Image (tube, rainbow, N blue to C red; front, side):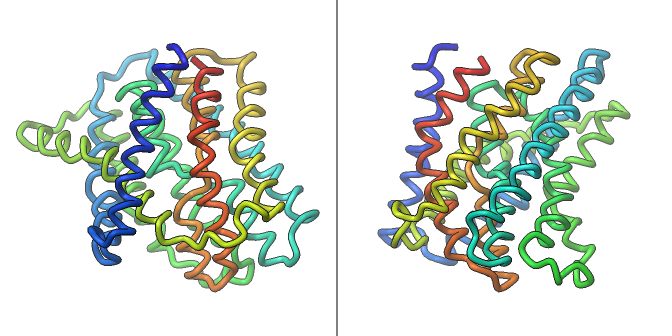
Length: 305
């Protein structure tokens, strides 16, 4: 795949993000509208997309590839956690700020950007493998992720947090795949149509979120630049170099590296506010990494295709 084709696919996604940004700034999408769209994507369209992505025949190749993806998941989190528990201690001004930085280094924007970008670059077949990533992401986000932000919150973790729709859809999809149970029509057609709305709506939601983030001091904050370089370049390149001798192809190599190159998870801001830590630095991280990923994602994608 040429860099022109890759860039065009990613630019389309960012134009959709621009639509969300403008709609939020001009009031076409209000605060309630943005929350409603976000809730629809998280609870309806994204689970439908994940569920239908796993409605595929059970083959030895697919099982083998699933094992390869789990290896990629392990490498991705080994690199992310290694940097997350090393770099922030040298640049953070406080333990709470270090926790937010660790969160930003470990958790990328898998749902709102990872799935749409993987779908655009590698096609709908890649969503099956992204869904395996989503299992570990959801489990870690509401356990380790919360503890990164607030180490004292361990005894207050609510097990209900793990029962989110993305995780449920991934588990249900894997069970249906393993048992080779196929969703009958017209339900399958409904899920397919709902899933097809994920990419445009998710990018509009990200754009609407960016329109609400404070811009003061973003481009002069050296700490955020360090996090940005690590998030968008160092982590995906490290994952690529580690995986390359062992796996190849768009799914086993491409999917883990592409997901490692995603910007900071959009819910970093929401969780930082929820647990009363510095949401400002999370906002800066989300904004800067998302904007700069327009330039870095085509380069990373060219590296793996």
